[in-house]
Each structure stands twice: as C-alpha cells, then as structure tokens.
Image (tube, rainbow, N blue to C red; front, side, top):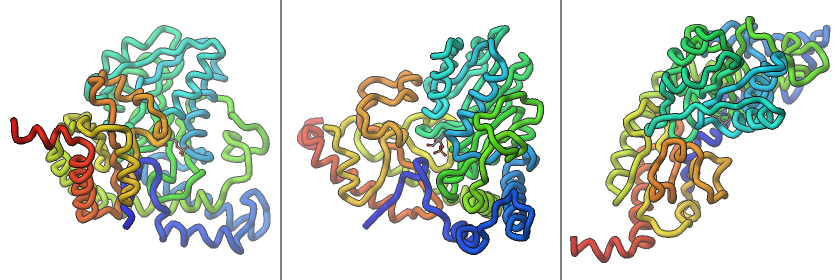
Length: 384
Ligand code: PLP
C-alpha cells in the first residue's frame, strides 16, 4: 500500500502531460531558434505553451519568461531587479520559501538592507506591516501568494496596491497557488510573479517569471537572445510543452479539482480533530484547498514521520526542504506558535488523485500510532 499526501513537495506527472511531451523527446528534436521545419515546429510548441500558461493566469504571453523552476524565477526577480538598482533596500515577508529567502540573504550579504515583514498568528501579512517596511529607498517588496507549509493565502491585491502607491516594485511567489486558486496576474497589481510546473501535474525543472514590461532588470544568464533577451539558453522544449499542457488541463478542470480538494480537506480536518491534542494551524485564515498543517503534540518522540512512512503513507514535516532537519519551521516561529506545538508537525498536502478511503487509512494509522507512542495518554484516560 502506498498513499501520497505530499503534493506541495511535488505532484505526480499527469499522464496526459507526459503524452504531450513525448513527441519533443523523440522525433521533434528541433531547436526553437533554428530556421528550418524542425525548428519551426519546436518554436510553435513553445508559443502554444506560452499561450496556455498566459490564459490560466490572465497574463500576456509576452510577459512570460520560462525558467528552470520556481527557484530560478525567485532568484531572477530579486537579483535581476536589484542589479538594476545599485542602491536601495528590499523587504520580504517572514514566511517566504527558502528559494526566496536565499537570494534575499545573498543580497544582504552584499550590503543590501533587508527588511522583514512580520505575520499575525494566523500567518497573514497585515497591510500595516507592509507599510511599516516601506522606506523612501525601498526598491522591491516580495510577499508570497500562498504559503507552502500552512497554505495561508495573502491579500496580494491590497498589498500590491500599497507597494505600488509607494512607487516600489512588487513580486509574489505564486508557486503553491498556481492551479489551486484563481490567479489573475493583470488584476493582481503585482509586477512579477514566480511559478513552477511540478506543483500542478507538470514536469520538474521548469517554471516561469511573469513580468510586467515596466520592470527594469538585468538577466541572470547572458548568452543568446532567448526569452526576448531575459533568460539566455536553448529552451527546454519538452518541459515547457508539459508546463503548457498542465496549465490547459488545470484551467479545464479547475472547478472539479477545487471541489474535490475542499471536500477532502474538510473530511481530513474532521478526522484530525478527533486525535487528542491536535491543533490545525491557521484554521481561521483563507487557505489553499489542499493543505493542512497540523501539530500532534501528544505523540512522543521524533519518529512519527518514519512510522507513517513504514505504514506506506508519505507526508512531510513542514516544507520538504526542512524535513530531516530538527530545527523548527521559520514559518511557525514567525506565527509565534507555542513551543510545545513545534514538534510532530505534519504538512498534509492533497492532490487530485487522493480519495476519502486514503484519508480513513491515515486517520486510523494515526490513532494506532497514538496508542503506541503516547501510553501516558491511554493510561490517564480513565482518571479524567
Ligand atoms: N516557492 C515555493 C512557495 C515553493 O513551495 C517551492 C518549491 O518547494 C519553490 C518556490 C521552488 O520551486 P522549484 O522546486 O520549481 O524550484
């Protein structure tokens, strides 16, 4: 038996997406920059993918810069824009993914002033905190659309309005939000948005930075004039085709997937609440339909994830990048979560293929493990 509940780490490649990619891994091997038939076929496939992605997020196809993933898109947004502005500060929220915190820290290491925007106890970025982080020389603000651990959604349109009014560039990491909530790039007011394919049924190693034409920046990679001079390097045609196909499917199946995930999430949360001491983080905030971050403080020891793995259930503790590390999640620390809730945290992230039966197995397994690992709880039950 194998149950996969870690879709925020990555999703399985949709079989239909794979089919769309296969021709470009076989006979259609042309370079999109070549002037002959094979080149033109590859170029046309890139154009279609660009249109498919643009349609999903209401952006113009020309605003899309394909990258090697969300990490590169985040690096390009921060380092690319700041390279154009030799002086000035950056502000990022305290709950950003490591692929955003990393380049921000690198810029701070080069002497940039880096400001942190705090969150409330539900993991939301208050508008007042954004205003507080804006200085006359702030050049860029980055606040993620959906958090990868808690699933909490930010009020990006209003945050972007505050940032724009101050004449500052606004970036948002929308990697976890893509295909799970409705994204309207044009209406959002953000100048730049990072996306990735492998969190929405597409292949790994491909993503995009969506950029408003008004943003001045320096490319990270120099070379040929690919992606209108914004990202040099022969395009990963098969992966980009897969990204486009995944976007088209997400658009067609959006309502159906969302309803399925919401039903499953409610069912999961009801089951989790039946476990002694369980606390679901950010339960009162607007969240992604597929993500539940829960603390099970009455489980003893650090072996909960391994025991679930042995039972065939695959789940992460916080973000995938944090698993294996015993240090508490910076996201939960920023939310000022009580220290006793920082251990035995599970991030359960659902996907289109999950079923109610799988949730039943998870909850039954957790009850079994609770009896095994919290003997004091069982013994004291009769004395209560
Ligand atoms: N941003 C967020 C919020 C993520 O969850 C991830 C992946 O875990 C990334 C960025 C990085 O994307 P990629 O794996 O495509 O580099």
